[in-house]
Each structure stands twice: as structure tokens, then as C-alpha cells.
Amino acid sequence: MKKGNLLLTVLMFIVLCFTTVGFAKEDSMAPSMYREGVRAIDAAKAEIPETCVLTSYDVDGEKSVVAFYDQATTDRYKVKVLTGTSKVLEIERKGATFVKGSTMVNLSVEDIKKIVLAHFPDAKNIEVELDSDGNNKYYEAKFVSNRFAGELEMNPVTGAIFELDLKFY
Image (cartoon, rainbow, N blue to C red; front, side, top):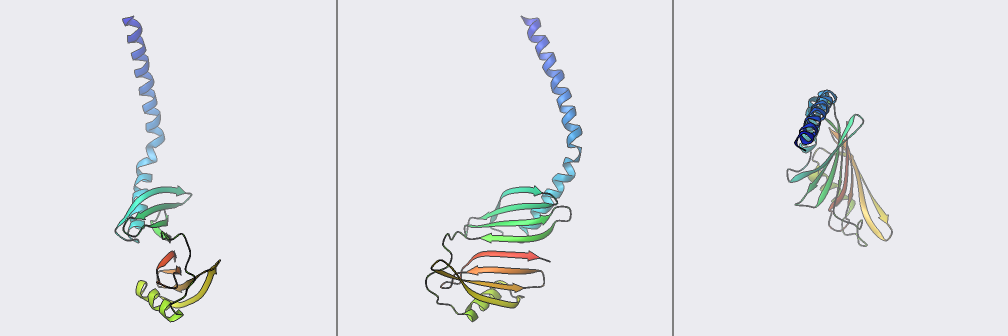
């Protein structure tokens, strides 16, 4: 019985050794891929509020898709980064609002433009239009800045931004 256990243990050790060597060869590129992933996450994190926590990371071809959650505001961020260069391509932010807008409109187009400028001081060519989703109305604002083109969807009563999409140049 002891010889059988000893033989089984030796065989398992040999299999384990060969398996480890095989994985080591396959993962020889892992350190550089890991570093690129860390750089992509760092680049994404630099563009969003500090209160956000990382929720997921995925690679889609040459792009990394990094997701964050902001516990302070309950907003969710999805940041697309060019993995090899760590260049941020796009940021999408979705608020916790499940209903777009309101049935009332208290803010004017000029009010919305002021809110856009408060969030993005270098915004130019701001275009605002009142849109609707069923009976609910909301403002959609489009603008450009030195770094990106932006689109916002905003509550027409409070001016709260419930969707944000920034496409970087």
C-alpha cells in the first residue's frame, strides 16, 4: 500500500512539473500584457473622479474597456483606452436615473449652456435641444473642447447630467 501511494505521489509530482513548465512558456508575454493593462487602467482612472472604484477590465482587440463605479454619486463609467499607447478614446457615464428627464421643463437653453460651461469650461459650439422619451422631456447638449467632443443628456428641471459621452481626439 505504501509503495502505491509513493508511486502515485511521484507521478503527480512529475505531471505537476511538466504542467508548470508548459504554462511558463505560454505566459512569457504575460508581464508586458499586464503592464499595458495597468497603464490602460491608470489612464482611464486619470479621466474620472477620484471617488470611483474599478469594477472590471476587459480587452477588446486593441482596446481596453475599463469600468468604474462612483459610490458617492452612483454613476457608472465605461472608459475605452487604446491598450498599446494608453490613449483614452472614449468615456461613457450613466447616472443612476432610470427615467430620462421630467414631464416639466424649468430650465432654459441658456441655463443648460451655463451648466455645460460649469462642467467643461473650454466647451465651444454648444448646441442644446429639448428632446423627449415618451412623456418625459430632457435636454441633449453637444459641444467640442480642445480634447474631446461631448454629448450630455440633462434633466430639464434640475440640470443634473444623467448621461455623458466624451469622444477624445
